[in-house]
Amino acid sequence: MAHSRRQLLRLLGLAGTGLALNTLRPASAAAADATLSERLSVCRPAGDPLQELLRRNRDFSRTWQAAERSDDPLSRATLLHETWPLHCQVRPDALAAGQRPWASVLCCADSRVAPEWIFACGAGELFEVRSAGNTAFDAGVASLEYAVAELAVPLILVMGHSGCGAVTAAMASNPLTPLLEELVTPIRASLKPGADLAQAVRNNAAAAASALPQRSALLRQALADGRLHIQAAYFDIGSGEVSLV
Ligand SMILES: [Zn+2]
Image (tube, rainbow, N blue to C red; front, side, top):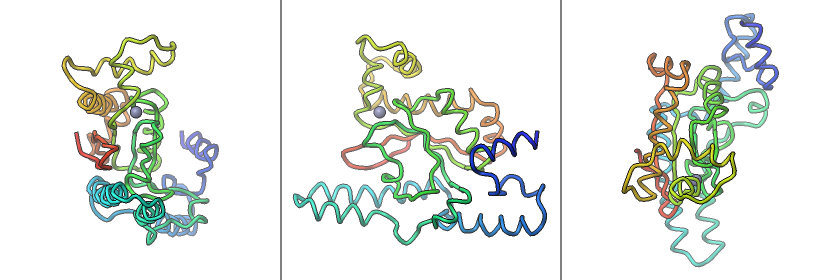
């Protein structure tokens, strides 16, 4: 089993991060791994990762709204640029050797829903799974299993957003391709009578968050052990604000 895990890490270009294999390596290698882990963790919050995501989003939404009020493209760009936490960047040479993300986000593929932007994060901070409608699809759940098991990610945020095209398609009865029909099936299952689009998006995010541990024994065990928290959320594109569901 250990051999196959090591092969998997090598295939994924992660061999040598040592974050999961310390016990199998000599002391000097373990010390090097500890140093690497420290360098990869410079942007990692000391406290609750969910509260840190929300804190960073408040910064983002403030500048997002300020940019909206400006007619000058340069001042809009300057304001938004200042959102980035330039004081905190994981060095590229450390990232070349490994990763230690501190949160995972399952969100829509929509071009307006970029987690690094919304949560003011840089490379190496967020482990992202994106697909139209942010459903708990097979490859997505497997990716999150990897994030939790091998990268020890303590939080999965399942985030829907305003104006979601996939949820809109699920609410309509227009003909879809077979694969799109497959994609919207779990969204349709989460729909409740009388709900508008915003509520349907929230319901879908909550349903996907519930589906993760139902579909994965590994995630279920991590939740039971207290190593993982799963939270549903809603991103409003107009205000830039993320709210919990
Ligand atoms: Zn969407």
